[in-house]
Amino acid sequence: MSRIDLVKGKVGPNSLGGYEKCSALVGQFGNLTGSSGALEEGKPLLLYNINEAEGYGLKDNPLLYHHVSEYFRMGGKGATLRILNLPAPTTFKGLIEDESVKQMIMAAKGELFNLGFAYIPTGTVTHVDGLHSEMLPAIKAAQALADWTRDTKRPLHTTLECAMFNGTSSTALNLRNMDDNGVPVHCPQVSVMIGQDYSFAETLTGNQQQYAAVGTLLGCMAFQPVSYNVGEVATMSLTDSTRNVWIQAGLSSHKTVTELEPQLDGLNAKGYIFGEYYSGQVVLNDGHVCAPEVVDAEGNMNEHTIALSRTNAKVFREIYKAYEIKLKSTVPVDPKTGLLGVGMLKYYEGVGNRIFENMSKKQELSGGETIVDPQSNLLFDKKELKVFYNWVPMGDIARIAGTINIRRSI
Picture 1 (spheres, rainbow, N blue to C red):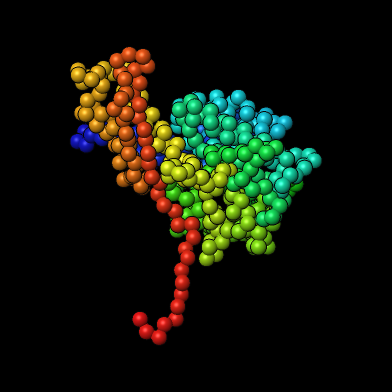
Picture 2 (cartoon, rainbow, N blue to C red):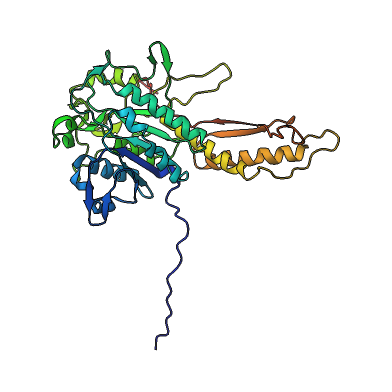
C-alpha cells in the first residue's frame, strides 16, 4: 500500500512573455507536409518552437526554415510564431493585401504584435532607386495594413524582406524621406530589412541567394522589450560561432558588408536595416522605420524608430484595455456644476497613470501622465469622457562622442 499520494499540479498563465513576443511571418512557401501535418495555404500555423516546425515539413523549404529557426533563436523563451502560407501572389503588394492576412490578425484576438512579410521577386526584375520595383507599393500597403490594425484596436509593427537590393548609399531610395509623385510617404509602422547571413545565402541558388533576413529581425523584435533598440550591442549579437550563423554579414545584393563598408553609413542614414560588425560580432545597425524624425513646436514626437512604434502600440493597447471596462459605468457628478468632481477626475486619471507606472517599472518608457478634461459632459449629448495621454520614451545611445587627451598629469 502506497503512503505517498502524488497529483499533477495545475499550470497557471504563461509568464514567459506577453503579446509583445507574438509574431507572424507571411509568404508563399509552397506545399509542405510532415509527420505532424501540412502547412496549408491560407490557414495560419501557430508554432511554439523550432521542433514543431520540423513536424510540418518546413525543412523541405530551406529558406523558410532559416527564417523560422532564426526567429526562435533570436526570439528566446516565450516567443511564438504564426506562419501564413499564401498562394503565389502576383505582386508583393498583393501578398500584403491578401484578405487572409487580416483574417489571421482578427483570429489572433490581439495576440500578434510583430508582423513580417517574406517575398522574393521571380522572373524579370526591374529596379528603381536600388529597390526592386515592387518595394515602394509594398511599403505603402504595409502601412495601410498597420493603420487598419490601429483602427481596429490591435496596433502592431511590420517588417518587409527587401530582397535583391542593388543600390548604393548615393542611389538608394531614402526610406526616411520618401515621396510618391511628389506626395510625401511616411510609414512609421514599416521597417525594411536588406541584411542577410551571407554564408547561409551561399547555400541557396537563383534569386533566393539575394534574400533578406526578415526572420532574424522578427526574432530581435520579439526578444527585446518594446522600448529597446533591436540593434543593442550588449544583448543582440546575431553571431553564433557554434552554429556557424551570421559569421559573415551581407546585404541582399549578396555582397558582404566588408566589401561594401564605404556604403554602410549612407545606407544607415537612409533607414535600411542590416547587420554590421562590433568587435567581431554581427549586430543589426539600428531600428529604422520608413519615416523621418519629427518633433513639433510643442515637443510631440512621431514614431521614428521601431522602439517608439512598438512602445506606442503597447501604450495604445494597454490604455484601451484599461478604459474599455469603464464604458457605460454610472458616474457621480458634482450637483452644483453637473461635471465631474475632483475625486472622480483623479480616479480616471489614475487609471491611465497606473499603466504608465507599470510600463516605467519595466523600463518600457520613462514616464507618462493622464489628464482628464474637467469640462467633460457626462449628462447629455455624447456623454464623452475626454482624456489626454502623454508619455516620454526611454533614451537611446545611438553614438558616443568622446575626446581623448594625453595629459602630463591629472
